[in-house]
Length: 569
Image (cartoon, rainbow, N blue to C red; front, side, top):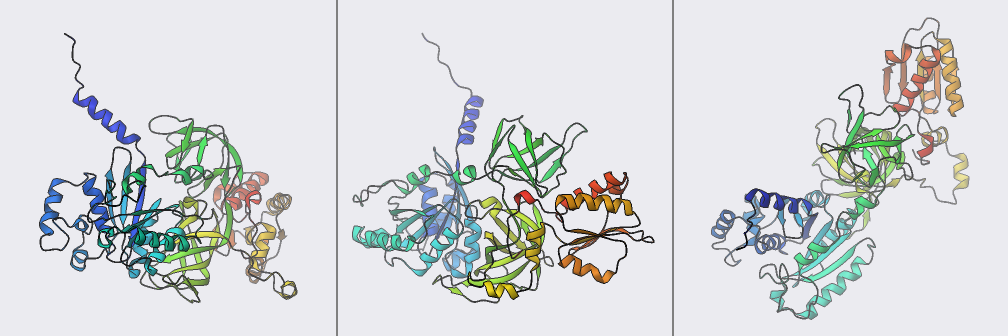
């Protein structure tokens, strides 16, 4: 008699965990007009895929008594706030996790009301797919257009148009085809969107998890089958390598690593990389993780990189693939969604949080505010809560970015009120600011004043005054290093403080030495800071090169090889 081998509970559990860990993850969001059935659809997905706990199901069944939604009101599985249940609408963003044998999912159930646009943007900001629900009785509405536009704005490549409540239209193919044709005509203006159309009944469960025999004219997959097979994660993997440095790891004298999360692309040992803002080039020496070293790492892994060369790197710097570096600029255009009750004030300096660094920034221009229902561009002097607009921002120092449509990780940011510490806006970078003058404005340009942006573009530096006390020899060596570098630099042996502002505005580096002066400091448009004592300890050449590196690190000198020109910086 053959022996029977019985797997131990421990090995079976380990196999289960290994299978679950191997599954990929799809984050998606739902959107639609009020009463289109978003929450009901998600409840049906959870229920039919057996992802609802028995006690939760019992609670929802009791709460469903007296409601006109059948034995179970599936919307109660997601509408958790008391105000939501009382009004029958979704207000907050409800996140739900569930899984099938093929894939794991995170759903963001977002509100359909125009006054909760910011909630929808919040829920969709990390999604890769959006499900837009359309009521089969009403067809394509302005709200549906608004949600589709926001999905396109946020760079969601996949859009599911779920025509819901087909049971109320006797499962009519003619009704469905009419809505599909209208929607395809509208979506033709968004070339980045790949729409998938499906007729469903969230209440009855038709084409949600299993295919419906009441719509035999529909030959496509059910909704869950489509969600299980749609490609995910390709944008981040195929984008150029970007690695914002979060922390310097120095556990002992023999190890120096740079920790962070890969926001896009991949990197391997030995590959050429560029450090920003310094523009220095080197190669990856090793990729260190808690579980051991890797030969290659991919987004969104969190790793520690060691480099072949000793380079001065701090938190907020970015490590990028040398073959494809990001744009570097202070002035750029971006689409922002205003999230705060207090409107945008162009006189306020906000904190711009981009990747792992923060900079002060101002909104210089509001190009337009978007009419969320008609998609028209309206003139505006401010943006109120839930409004979307195209603006021009100027950061105190250059940031390194890609356009949001090409790279979410390095193309997105938030604005923070420095007084209240509240997040007031979410932004998506369109690109570096360009000269808005018409092409035939050559005569106007001849008489126009030279802008600060043009000076920065020409000299690849910001204006600053470097006070070196009485060390004339040091100033001469530093002047030679800067001049050979290509900088606009001049040495003054006498100085008038009234010259400081004009020198900064002219984009010139002024080196100042005075016999009686003892202060060693740098004056820029950001303020006045003393030179670190360490840079002055060596001989004149060592100190001069240390000051040169300090000017690079503080982005007074800009990396020439990665600079993107812009007349408006």
